[in-house]
Amino acid sequence: MRITWVVIVFGLLILTSCKQPDEKPELKDPIYQELSAKPAAFENKIKDQEKKIEGLKKDLAELPSGAPSRKRAVSEIEGLERGLVFLRQEAEYYKVRAEQRLIFARREYLKAFNEGREWPDPAEYEEYQKMKKLREGSRRWEDRIPKLTRHQPKKDDPAQKKAESKPAAGGQE
Image (cartoon, rainbow, N blue to C red):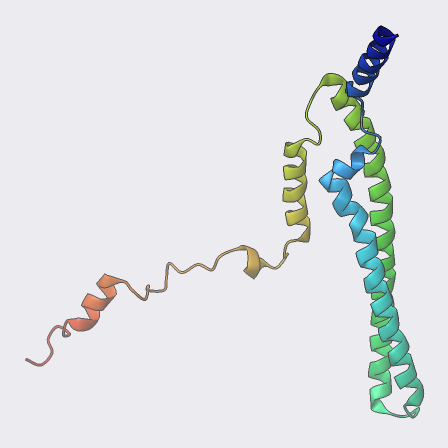
């Protein structure tokens, strides 16, 4: 009887200690975490934009028909509505992108688990961060390229200080 219990306990320990794949590997994936958080952020921006539009529409209704500020308010509302369409598109894009990443993460995790590799791959996340930085970075030339200063004298240039301290040639003595 005792041997049976020992065998059962030992068998249970062996079965429970076996390495098994994770049921939700996407929760370990930092790329999926970022992508799944973005739709909620865009939803908040959409709500704020809708509130602005509603407020401007109320203000527009109060303005007299011939007021010069009416045209400005109408164009501002139109601009906000165009921005609202863009925000909705971005929210939908990130929802779809997160779903794609979820499927990809599960598939890649199983491959890595079966091959005994580390997952998520740190090199992939590093590459994602680089691409994200390029995608979200400023596109203004002035922000990316340093100004050329080779034709301007440096403020602490010793040669410039010597030239200023020497009297001009042929001057007074």
